[in-house]
Length: 171
Image 1: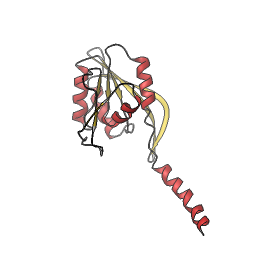
Image 2: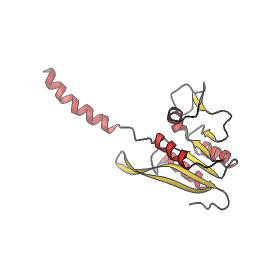
Image 3: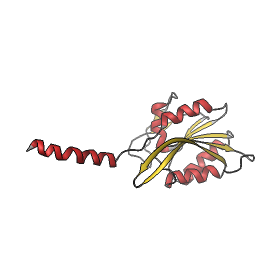
Image 4: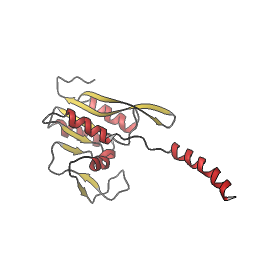
């Protein structure tokens, strides 16, 4: 009877795992693209949700501060003190995103945005898109990778490049 129960449970568990699959974050690919295309003076702005993946994959040394983020279950946040060319957004809301973009725009005319745990054309990504377009032209790197988000499918476009300034009309 154990073999029969096992034979019934394995396919069901497999289907349940597939339904709850985490989308491809593409953080290593985003980093490789940024490293290949980055100009002197560019700023990298890492979304709150991508901060832990970025800290894991990047060669930049993070500092872990014992301050739990409002949005997560971990007891610390990732920071890069003293780095004006690398910033982590301190929240998920539109105000935090706009504040971080304005801070970065005060230092450069090119901002690379690293996203994680966000779905194309949905909540957090829509907030990023609106805030980025309000300060300049946004170029989203097409990856060719199509992910399933519940019943929807969408291509991941990562990372984003924001060209700030009067000559960079919103795109």
